[in-house]
Figure 1 (cartoon, helix red, strand yellow):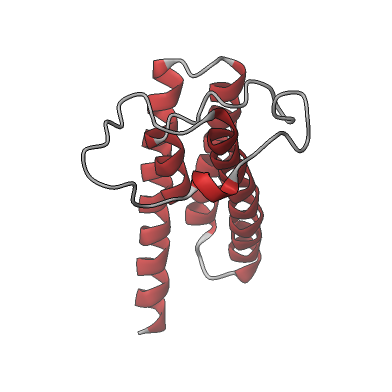
Figure 2: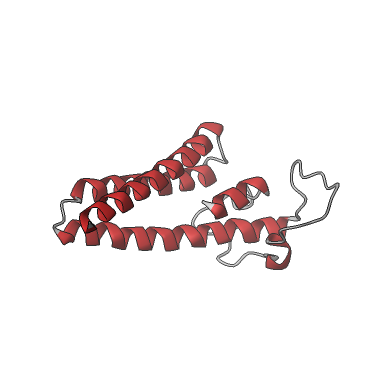
Length: 145
């Protein structure tokens, strides 16, 4: 979620308009030194962003890498829950389904050049995915006590 927010607020969502590559390359020109500077001083007008294209590309690619890590981890979690026999199959399927929808919306944002409806749905499903993980945590906590 943090990488998604950083991507959005730095206008980096349209830095890569193809998938699975970015700008026709697996390793496009990126500037990580500028991409993740947290403070740029007072009086800066951030409307439309202040970063050059290589920095925005670094942010976008980092968001993609974070998405892959998240999919791998949550996929592992879903399969573990399904095999656990703890009565959490419904929760596991909910998380897995939301994860698939989220990835599809993310890819759709890239390929469709960030239509408002898809971008909004991507944000909304991220919130639902977070809520479903909080719910899973609650269920596991209740089972432990």
